[in-house]
Image 1 (tube, rainbow, N blue to C red):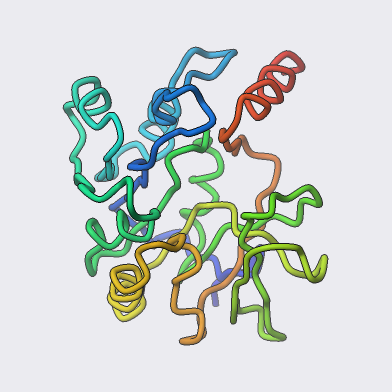
Image 2: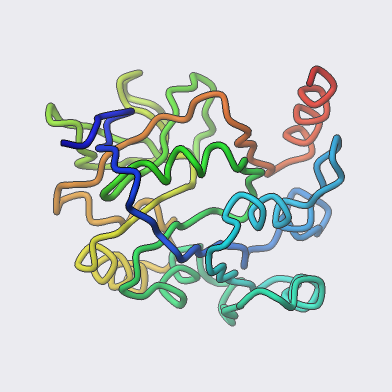
Length: 235
């Protein structure tokens, strides 16, 4: 029997070889800098550098749009999908363009992610969504409702309704082909939404795994980067 950790079953021999990074949008609050190229104040590595290291050995697909050439010229070793409607759609469209039936990780392209987190998720079998019970959340945060069996059954955006509803923080590991096909269909149909809102939670079987003390830092505003600078000084 597999172990149970963080709400997801554990089985060391299951591997997911594909990673889709969603990075087509414009950084409205970051002076036009592509988020993937934001550098960590302590190491000097970019967000994409961290993702390449964290998912070492896997097939990375980066969905680009805004400043696509800047990213592709710098990382020609990666595979890219171009979202021509990046200015008119949300990241649901980006995911729809790149998704297929292969088990995959999906990661928002504005997050510094650590190798030890991915190593832990590698031990989780099945379909999972990374969550956090942090108290401070933005109004655009996506919150998860979890049933008595430990599955995510619904998400909502906006003010938090209960502290028992963790936040979906932008990293998914989906292995079931029918979930992937339905996720893609819904993303094409509702391209103005976030991809995390459109997972087929009503199918049952998607489990939350809670973020622990691993590096996982989202950069959306200059204030976020100031916080990262302050945190990196204490390392």
